[in-house]
Amino acid sequence: MTARIESWAPDGIGDVQPGDDLARIVGDALVADGVADGDVVVVTSKVVSKAEGRVRVAADREAAIDEESVRVVASRTSPRGVMRIVENRLGLVMAAAGVDASNTPEGTVLLLPLDPDASARAIRAALQERFGVRLGVVISDTAGRPWREGQIDFAIGAAGVLVLRDMRGTPDTHGREITVTMTAVVDQIASATELVRGKVAARPVAVVRGLARFVTDTDGPGAAALVRSAEDDLFRTGSEEAYEEGYTAGYEAGANDAFASERDADVELDGDDAL
Amino acid sequence: MTARIESWAPDGIGDVQPGDDLARIVGDALVADGVADGDVVVVTSKVVSKAEGRVRVAADREAAIDEESVRVVASRTSPRGVMRIVENRLGLVMAAAGVDASNTPEGTVLLLPLDPDASARAIRAALQERFGVRLGVVISDTAGRPWREGQIDFAIGAAGVLVLRDMRGTPDTHGREITVTMTAVVDQIASATELVRGKVAARPVAVVRGLARFVTDTDGPGAAALVRSAEDDLFRTGSEEAYEEGYTAGYEAGANDAFASERDADVELDGDDAL
Image (cartoon, rainbow over all chains, first blue to last red; front, side, top):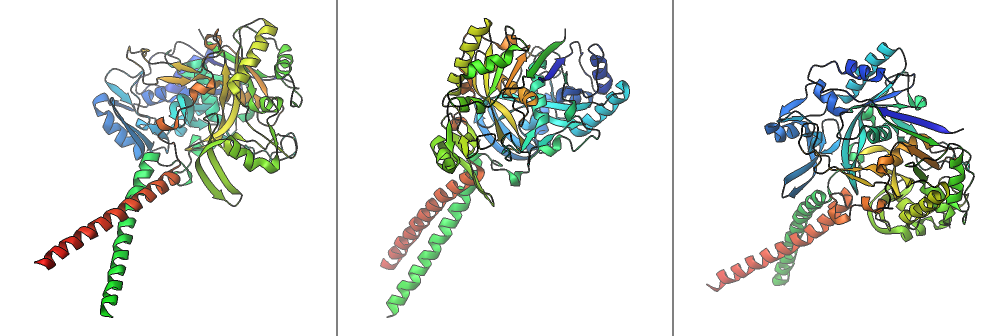
């Protein structure tokens, strides 16, 4: 038996405005191609932010980044200015805290949704009510990553779809436990639909059919479950920043130890003198 | 117009053995569902490694990791042992250098293919010859990432398919340049097909149809183009490791400066004494 999925992105979703009923707009876009039990609906964070009015004037971009940031993880100065990679309120590590200046109304920037998992749950509830089937909903965003060029889409919100597939204890085809322990299912769903949606065309919604086994009755823990806490992360701070932090601490310790050993030496010399 | 892709993973590919003609095995698996111009064929690195005989006895696992490693990026000690995240020969930053112990014959481990882009080119050439259509080929693997729980699939080899979609200079729907500049197309293709292939079932091959616009006449630069050099990376070294490095350098500088200032003070004291 061949395993199979299909994904499509309806065209013709107009500009979304603050206060718009996004679940209705998304639902209208789905009608033409039909909705089936077990479909996963992916909505870009951009239209969620627009509908939720998460808009700031562009002049306040730096203030918006500050507002969204919990801590600076790394930064780089280039001729274009300082690029800050920060951990934001949602625990996501993203350039400019995820504050977005492209495909936004002139003179504005967009902040990420306040609670993307809640947004996903609300859209899910409305779509399930409307279509009378069980659906998963994912809110997607785009980010760069360490070590690799290029950006990929990932999930910042999820409801009713398996977030992490836990493979621990699953035997492999040779009967041993497999070393891949957890698969970030919803991140891969977000990436898959980016291939269909693209970045430029006005296609903020995509459907994946064929993943009904990942669609759950309850809303589940949401994409928040994919956030690894800074304490548990081997890359919690940029290499330069961690080096600087270590250098400062080391410098102080080295200087203190040196003064202490000088003092000890002086005491010893005084002792010798006394003989 | 609705944009659409489809992906499937044929079943029934048996165990691959060293020396097997992998392109023939993959081609045989594709026949039942048909092959069309512009299809992208994704093959897991595991079967490429098996066919290429990249097998070691499990007792030599640590030696195999050493053999594959260029440098240690970060490490963590747990009750299960030391986990090393390294930059491997291919420039990929992966736990255990990508050396794999699951779904391998008992008592063996698998190293990554020697040159996955070359493997992709060879499979592409053979499949295009056999089916008489233009195809893209991706070699996929699985890895964890900083800041997020769970692993996702990504591309370690590619031929005939766009690796990075360069969006620089592309106007957004409001006529301004978009800030997302490069999309890692083949990584997203690898992630999309993991949803179809799964980890446990013997489905090492998947096809994506609907991305013909990303399939190129030439083989292109391969997935090697996705590797960011360590010098250009803000996370080239783990936070702990960078801190330790900084601490050591800072300690030495602090001690030297302290001794120097003590000497200066002594010289001053000697001067006072001479008065």
